[in-house]
Amino acid sequence: GASAVSSSAVPESGALFGVAGDMGVQATSKRTFSLHRVYEHMGRNVINHKVRDDAAKGRTTVLSLYSNARWPQIAAGARDKELVREAKQLKAFGKPIIVAFHHEPENDERYGRPSDYVAAFRRFVTVYRQQGASNVSFAWVVMSWNFRPGGPATKFYPGDDYVDFIAPDGYNSSGCRVGPAKPKRFHTFQQVFQRTYDFTVAHNKMMIVAEYGSVEYPTAPGLKAKFFEGIPATAKQWPALKGLLYFNHGIGGSSKCHWSVDTSGSSVAAFVKVANDPYFHNMPYKK
Image 1 (cartoon, rainbow, N blue to C red):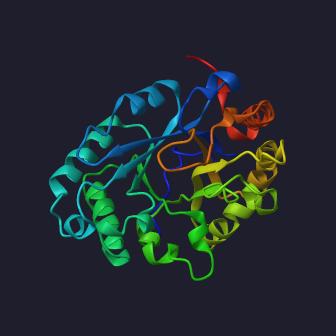
Image 2: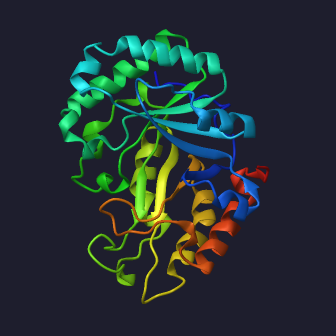
């Protein structure tokens, strides 16, 4: 049967809210966020200072664990010793936590084929369950645009028995990687994630938007704010959406896309308004 979602990881109604990346926007929002995404590698200390801080503040963590071996090796049990150790660490941690094995696998072909990823994901979950880490829920993270017809997302799906949360990463990028964002390519939050939400409901799962972001438009100031303004209405129409994490990062690496909330005053104001919507379970701000 389908795996039971830990009800203590997410609220019965409403959705958790927070960021992946720079937490500075919490203070601006005058809220302590209820959700936080932390990136780590297998083989390291999974209960790092960020996870401990989340626990101290009453935030739920989405912990992304990146593979430290090719997927066929993990599937064959070559990393079981590490998986057992990490599962025991998370079990001892005790608090509800959501763990994602190797996010965006469709962008990482050097680790193996889709079938290898599925087998590795299943091995990961199986070992955790054997250790009795019942406070851990499992998230499957792929790019939202890969749910398009003919897109590769579903080839990487580990199956209903191994997944608690469908957890897409998705962006309103509007061509930002090749030049200034074009207003005619603007997508709302709903448009970015609708197909993933449909998949979530079809599989009787819950959804956490593990990363989302929008760029500014040099020729249309205020359009990024409009992106934020549309989020609460969509979230309230999607009862299976249990969390959303804004990718609060500036321009990094080869990307020309500036996702940070603070790209304009209108963007900050719109984000803060969303963060303060009671639907999102944020708490009064404390350092």
